[in-house]
Every structure is written in C-alpha cells, then in structure tokens.
Length: 228
Image 1 (cartoon, rainbow, N blue to C red):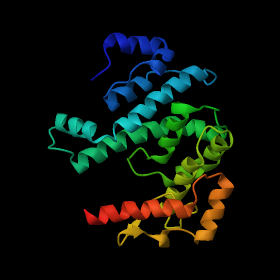
Image 2 (tube, rainbow, N blue to C red):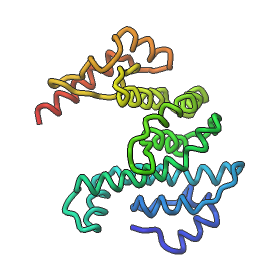
Image 3 (cartoon, rainbow, N blue to C red):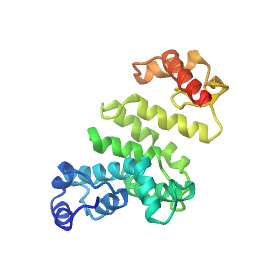
Image 4 (cartoon, one colour):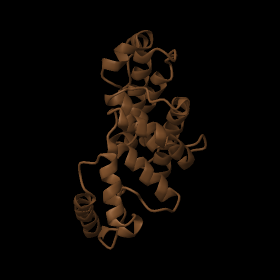
C-alpha cells in the first residue's frame, strides 16, 4: 500500500503529520518520503519525523511478506536471496548516509522512542554506498550510542549489540554476549570473553539480565534451530 498523493503532500508540508500518521507498507516509498524532508539542523520535530520514517523503512524491508511482495514485483519467485540482499543493501546504505552527519557531531540528540530506535537500528545495519557492511562506522558510532544510553534514550542492550556485532565482524570476542552464535545446538561460548568478564561488562553498562540467564535462553534457541 502506497501513501496517497494527498497524504504525501501533507506529510511533506507538515512533518508532524508524518510523525503521527500510519506508515506506508512499502519501505522504499517510506524511505523516499523521509528523503523529501529538508530539516534545518535545529528543527528537532522535523528531524524526529524523518527518522521515524527511516525506522519504518529499516524494519519494513526486513519483513518476509514485504520482501516476498517486492521481489515478486521484480519478477522473482518467493524471497530470492539476491533480491532481498539488494533491497536491504539499498535501504541500509541510504539510511546510513543520513545518520553519518549526526553521529559525527558527537552529540546525542536527546531523542527517545521510535526516532531514537531508528538512529540505533540504522547504525546497527550500517552499510557503505556499495552495499557492504560498514563495521568501521559502527565502531565510530559507539561513543555516540553510549551517550544515548547514558541519557536514558537507548537501552544498554542496544549499545552492547552494536559493540558485539562490530567485534565479531573484526574477528574478536564479544564483550557483552548479546549476539547469538550457535554451535552443536548450543550458544558458542568461544565467541565471547570469559563469563566473569562478560557479567562485569553487563553490570557496568546497566544490564538487568545476567549473561548466565541470557545464555540459557540462547542455548534453548540454538537447540530449537538444531532440531529443525
């Protein structure tokens, strides 16, 4: 379902409308709408409305039913892996370019809710213009995301997942144990720092859930995957 021309015009003329209105089910259309915004750096309401739309595009393209429909429109049967990767890469790369200037100010914008979540997810899914995962930018953004946690606008797990993902991409061990890596039907503890170190890291960041509890859950998920 695409936004009507009338709804599109209203959203462009009044970003607050976009902040509160139902979002198009088409992530490419939603992203195109976000890219029409020409927000002044000091126009916080406009910028939050833009990143709410970018959040919707980021999450929308990750829904199986959306990928299936978009790929079918391109003449592919089902969810073609190459088609899905192309769509994900395009949206992620365009979103990443939008968030780079914000990250490079070094100042968290003190947003909460969906706009803040949108900023984090875009960093988590960061890609370069050619569609490759941008681990260097994820690392660059960590102090920015930590400021969001310290402001109470992001959850400690948000920062930790980005840090752990970047570490794994670099061939290093996770500090917080937030990324599930399975081996032999269980969580692969060889992918994390020693358990006592991980527990300390989680406590220092303000986690409510211990690594021991998280590991039990991930063990169960890995076991389910192995039994399929």
